[in-house]
Length: 116
Image (cartoon, rainbow, N blue to C red):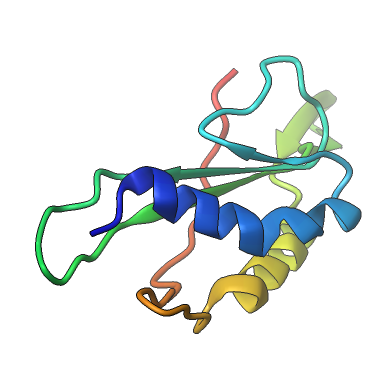
């Protein structure tokens, strides 16, 4: 049986090479508070204790918002181009990958606003 720690460690091993394509780093559990770089953070929900386990992991991608002027004021919006590019690289790195006792499948993706 695997723990959520092992799930996160496995995903980290699959994604750490992405540090060459983003401006920041790949982290486990948290992102440094003052980071303004492109970062990837890996988390996992608790792994159930069963003979067959399904564990849900979250891979959060952070990029700087794009600024634009609308109605005389500066607005912020998700940098969809950069988010999509990094997301495609993450999916390519993990989807369908497997080991002796695990298989990784990407089920969904979504863009959330990062509250300041």
